[in-house]
Every structure is written in structure tokens, then in C-alpha cells.
Length: 261
Image (cartoon, rainbow, N blue to C red; front, side, top):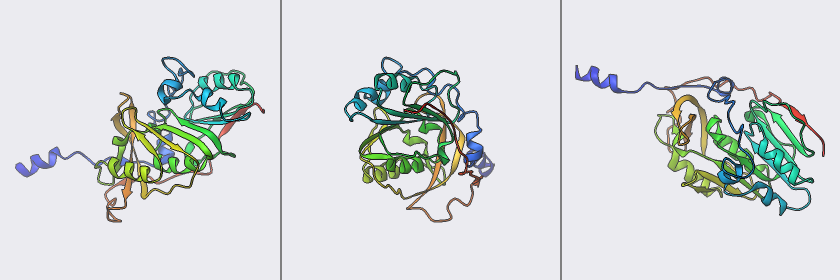
């Protein structure tokens, strides 16, 4: 009886999914993500990021560039484009804008899965406001985004370390944060903000195993995704129990709504 009771208390292993299945999940295809967030004010990018993107870009020369990942409706980007006529501003979102509206000069809004999308240029500013909570391989995206910065560019993104798991489901936040810091990233725990100054090649010592879209609420109070990784201090076969759909379509191309500068 004791053995049966003990087994009954063990939580079931999650079924991890690959990117193709994850992007179609209701938690990830979040139609409310950054839909009403504006450039400055109470519900704004400036408040969430700890800096005003337009002010930052204004000091980067006559043609600064800003890439916003998981941009939602792009209201903040529209405002920045109007304030900075020479800027090149790009927003990328899985769902894209819901409201059809003319884009200001210099603004491009792309509808695409970030797992298979890359920019054609380097950027002075890269942001991701609470978007990593819905990305499966968020460490892989951070590696790639680091190479999308200019030599003096800045990346700022929200990261929830508690949603990073080892293959056995235990917390991977400590080794992940240590590796990120070793690669040059800075993490502000109070605001859950991760930042990097200066573009570079980054290779983190983790192998992505899949994601659990049923992980439950994160620190924002909204449902998020847990990402599972094999870490360097684990045996190569410690993910043998996971049911992982590794399917990924990296050939998917995003749709683009654009007005040329």
C-alpha cells in the first residue's frame, strides 16, 4: 500500500513538443501579447525595458535600427517610427497585427515563427518584452539574437529562469544564468530583465529537448511555456524518458507588411 501511495504522488512526466506543435498551441499563439503596450507611459515598453527605445535610438546616429521580437500590434514601434524619421524599425510576431493600418515610413511588421526567421541586417537595439515566455528554444534564440546586434548594440529581453528545466524536470536556472553571464549577458532578477551590449557569437552549453506548453502561470500570472535542456553536467541519455516531438520546419518564411524607407 505504501509503495502504491508513493507512486501515486509522483507527478507524470510532461510530453514535450517540438516547435511545429508548440506554435499552434493556444498558450503560444497569444493574441493579447503586446497588443496594447505603447512606447511610453504606464503600460509601455519604456517601463518594461527600463529605457525609452526612441530616446536610445535617437543617440545612435541618423539611421538607427530597432528589432522587436514578439511585437504584437506594434503600437510602440509605430510611435517610434514617427519620432525617428530616419530609423529602420522591424517587428516580428507569430500572430502579427490584428488591426489593418498604414505603416509609418521605415517600419516593417513581419508575421513569422522566430524559430526559423533571421534578419537581413544587424541592429542597434533588439527587444523582446515578455515574449521569451512563449518561445520553445529561448536559449537558441538568445544565441542567434546576440549575433544580430551591431558592435555597440543593446539587447534587452524578459527571461523567467524558473521556466528552464533539465531533462528530468528539475530547475536549470542556476547553470543557465551562469552560462549567460559567462557569455557577457547581465540579468536583473528584480525585473526579470536580461541584457547584452555588443554583438557577438554565443554558444551556450545546452541542448534543447522540447517544450511543455502546459507548465502553468509564470511570474506575470499568465500561462507560459517551460523549456527543457540537456545540460553539460548530465549524462547524454538522461532524456530517454521524454516523449518529444522534434519536428521543426525551419524553412517556413514569414509574411511581411512593409513600407520602404
